[in-house]
Image 1 (spheres, rainbow, N blue to C red):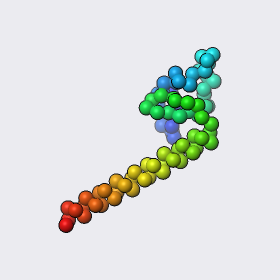
Image 2: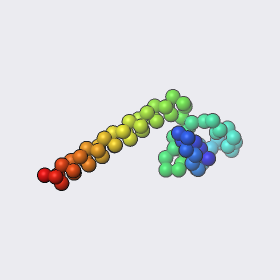
Image 3: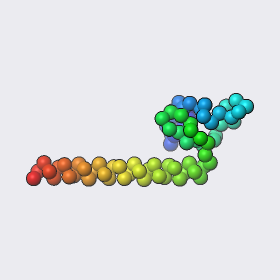
Image 4: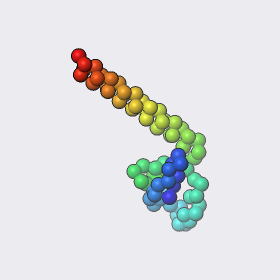
Length: 78
């Protein structure tokens, strides 16, 4: 189980598993997660940068969707 911004998820750790098999060594570590797989270990600074970009992308997507909805509403009322 991992914690992503307060949400716990089950993630496959096979890609970042230490060679000695010590899964306990991963506790407290940062990782890049994609579709349920821990893809690589990263440091806290890289994790913060990645989260910032993802938040910006989410905000941009919300703005694009709002513009689309506004444009659709204008088209319906014309």
